[in-house]
Length: 234
Image (tube, rainbow, N blue to C red; front, side, top):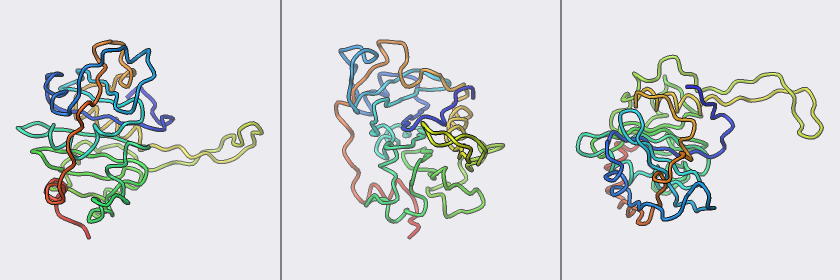
């Protein structure tokens, strides 16, 4: 990966193996924007949808998170397809440890970020990359928690501390924390999709890439949510 996302505070992207943008838009309740999303100050419901690698990439560049929710991953991963999301910042709200629906899976819920891989309409594996320990099964949830093991090689999710300057306007020597989970998550997306992550993924230079989530998918019932998530941890 050539793109450094360690300084991006909010990130919401979903990849699916579908090959038709119109089909993906329909599945997630999106309609083409009638204005140029690159020029207008738009809302959280704004999304961009582009072809990427072996499928389609969806981004929400204005602090939205609908496209990374359980309902969307379930819809996009049916009929032999796969759907994968990588999120951090406000976009991990659907997966948060404190979310009511996530209580039975709170040990593997999101604190600062989330990575989820879905197939056959349900979650294969999900985990918070900020707290990821590949030797600890409790940090993963889903029906097949080893589903992404083949994509984990040579990846380091742990933060590192380096010497640098801290203090803003009055800089002084100190320790800086560099978070590696962001680049690790996107590297996994690249390995799954078979392509290098596009530098302009959030705001592609194409008028046709702009959509709005006009009809968000209805929330899952408690039973549907449990069926999607897999065996409860608590």
